Image (cartoon, rainbow, N blue to C red; front, side):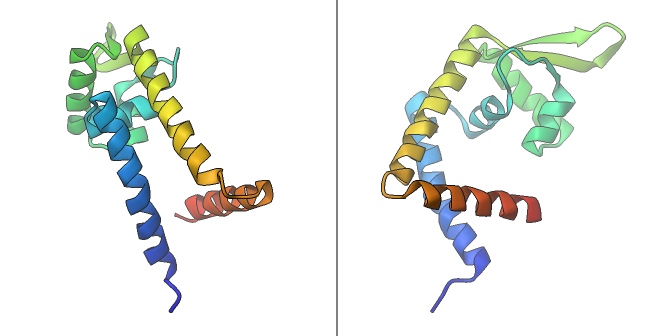
Length: 136
């Protein structure tokens, strides 16, 4: 019997989570730090509420994530003088290095996934996943 679309999505999610957890473990990162580093771009300054939006977190949860990022010295934070509730954040050198390590590990996973696929199949999968993401 063929799996339903949602069943397929969940099966893929479980397989990807296994790799994600291994990367987190190998790099000594919590899921929250891992997620934050994924959405932060090198040399980009963003407000903490943008971090919350990108991570789909509540403002209070994003504030706790920001605290952890600062404790680990992955970001520098600066309060805007005109609004103390607005905090600008930017990756530090350590944050950039750790993000690079995450990206490298993710690329290794992608290489494994694509190793038995033809280029046209890879393009088809990417196109289908982009369509699915847009639909969600």
